[in-house]
Amino acid sequence: MSVSTPPAEKPVPAASAHTSQTAGTRRDGRPRRGVKPSRILLVALLTIAALYFLLPVYWLVVASTKSSAGLFGTFGLWFSDPQWLDNLSKVFSYSDGIFWSWTFNSVLYAGVGGALATLLAGAAGYALAVYRFRGREAVFKAVLAGVLLPSTTLALPMYLLFSKAGLANTYWAVLIPSMVSPFGVYLCRIYAEAAVPAEMLEAARVDGAGEWRIFGTLVLRTMTPALVTVFLFQFVGIWNNYFLPLVMLSDDRKYPITLGLTTWQTAADRTPELYQLTVGGAFLSILPLAAAMLVLQRYWRSGLTQGSVKG
Image 1 (spheres, helix red, strand yellow):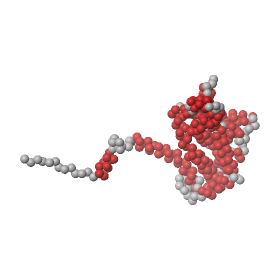
Image 2 (cartoon, rainbow, N blue to C red):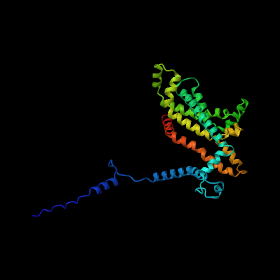
Image 3 (cartoon, rainbow, N blue to C red):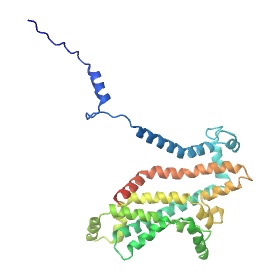
Image 4 (cartoon, rainbow, N blue to C red):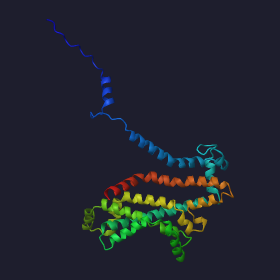
């Protein structure tokens, strides 16, 4: 009687066993899924959208390196005889350095106006979120109406008001309207309701702190993400504002960059050199905005996210 023995199994190499495991399964043992077509479509759409928004910036960078003749005579999306430093020096030296005055004015309007608007919006939003008083909801609804109201509709009435007060064609004519931010009040109220606990305020009052001290030391620190978000929005809005300075100002030495570059573009038909100066000035004008976005983006994202989720 003979007994048949099963054939011995060939040993599987360790590397091939590991490869077969990782190719078909995840580390937790679940089967690996392929990339969904919807995900590929989403990534493709986002890539196209990103290119759509970045293409004008790329064109501006390329155009700022060209001469006036090369601006219209060469391919717009590629460099041709770059002379970037020479172009920028002409921007700063043209008309006795008036571009420096426009830059200073834009920093003044956007920086000071944005900071004061942020402080006022934080105080108003905190008051609407914490204190109970008659007419609170009516005030908040009036603020919401201000968010929906286009700023251009208020420019002419404000000009008549400031002209009556003798403030037209002054720095105050642009600064005072820039200190108001209805969207900032709205965002700060939502954020304060979610992020400022009533127990913290009661504990501070028990320790003897006054309302102004509580607001200056505790509330502002707690609301920092929302305040940075409001400042960033207000800074960008004032920096890009065109219609209000156009209505309020008549002295070109008080113009912001946006209005000054428009005057150069308007005069470029008579002085073709101004085409290149306008492009170079536009490139310089976006640098502060890009720097502010890069530095403050982490506060901006956290402020918007927390306000939207907990509001």
